[in-house]
Image (cartoon, rainbow, N blue to C red):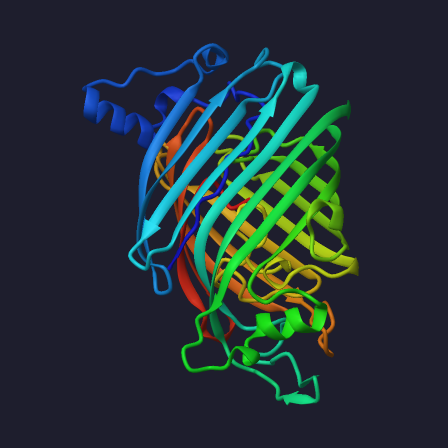
Length: 414
């Protein structure tokens, strides 16, 4: 089981056709339980008072252990709700019995009439990952033979647990240049330290982090990837938290710079595309959704733990059915399709089914798009806050090589 806390994006508009009065959410149920009554909020009044919700969370992960924490979300308009997107912040934290922990804070704020958009994330944590090396197509492939200082290191086709501490900060500012079109720029800082290959009696020279770091000129126990971002975005979704219809497309050019603290220079092109189809006017929650996410290394190199792969999107949701980092490469491509549908008339509970595939290359002979790793599963949704359409997600997925797990998070996966 994987514990994952995801972000709230921003709500583009209040859907007045939704019958909010007939809907029930977890926030209202808890409020009613503790106060004896639940006072409905007029979404238009959120420009004055806003909306805030807090929910406890718990999960189990064989690597992390039992984990407990809390997730929270809030929203407020900074302009007329008719032409201004709802600004949202989200925070979450957990601690586990294996002495692992994480804290995440994310925001997406819009000025009046969406002329400016400020997006940012901060993640601090101590975690453990099961590392299988680079590329897709084989359960265990390894990094190949390595010669260093006249010493020969044989291939290492095994899985190695690795513990590390990370700090990730990302801040972007967008300017609206046309209807639904935005241009932006920003900075990204990713720090990895206290990298301890939890290998017991296995020599450090066999681990994938060590092999990659030595080959590409990185320290083996700490490194960083800090860079400049240039963004081009198209967004006409009806509501980014839980869209019923629309398109979201984002193209990001990231250049890691040594003068910003990076160990090595690199340029990456990241592309994201999402499309949503509402299949019913009477039940707009019946949605077919598609997600494409890709990261291509144009030149240079990035540190091992910063390579794109499973769970490496901004909110750690890529690749349900696999642990974070199960597949990764110098470049990485991911596709997913999901069907969403309500289960109860009051919209408190909903369900999803999903299928996905991912492909990655390595530094040897595995090329991008050559092998695809599939995953599929089902999920349950608990409406968390009906005014922002945020919900609690519980998914079960199965993938290639017998991989399976439960995945918990706040808000739709995409």
